[in-house]
Image 1 (cartoon, each protein chain N blue to C red):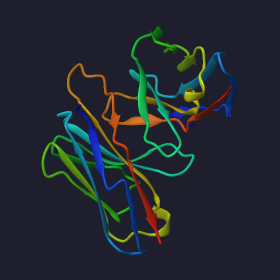
Image 2 (spheres, each protein chain N blue to C red; image 1 turned 90 degrees about the vertical axis):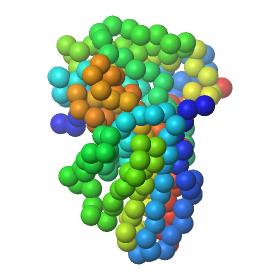
Image 3 (cartoon, chains in turn cyan, red; image 1 turned 120 degrees about the vertical axis):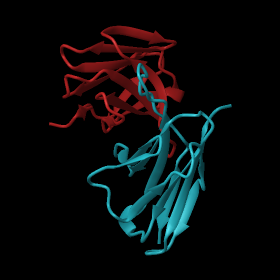
Length: 115
Length: 110
C-alpha cells in the first residue's frame, strides 16, 4: 500500500544533542511537510518542500533544518534540542498542481523526548 | 481572529447518538476544507474533504459547508466508542498550507 513512513517512531535524545528524523513516501507526492505537534495543540507547520523548493515558516526556529535529497525522502534535523522541542513530529505529503485539492496525508509521527 | 476556530469543549455523546462539530474560518478565499480524526498519541487521519457548499456524506460521516457564513461542520451518526478521538478542522487558503483548528475532543459513552 502507498504510504508515508516515519523513522524512528520514538526518539530519545539528550539536551543539546543533534537528532535527525526521517520521512519517506511511496505516494509519489510532490509536496512534503514537517509539523510539530505538542499535547492538546494543533499541528504547527515548520516547513514544506514544493518539489525541490524549500519553504520555511517565518516563526520556525533556526534550530530546525530540513533536507529533501529526492522526491521520496525528507529529513528533519534538530541541531541542539531543548526541553521545549519535546513533541510529536509529523511528516505529511500532498499532490499539488492545477486542479489538485490539497489533501494532506500524514505519517505515523515520531515522538521526541528530550532529557 | 484566528484563521480556524473550533470553540466547543469536549463533547460527550451516548453510543448511537449524533455528534455535531462546528468550525469557522476567517479567510473568505478558502477553497478546500478537511476534517481529520486523531486518536490519542497517533497522527491525524483524513476522514472528510469538502470543496463546495452543501452536504457531503461518507458512511456515518457528513460534512457540511457554508461559504457565505464561513463555517464547516461534521456530523457523526450512530456514534460508536471507536469514534472517541479529537477531530481537527483544516482549511486550505489557496496555497500549499493548511490552517488547523485546535480540535474538538469527542467521547462516546457506551
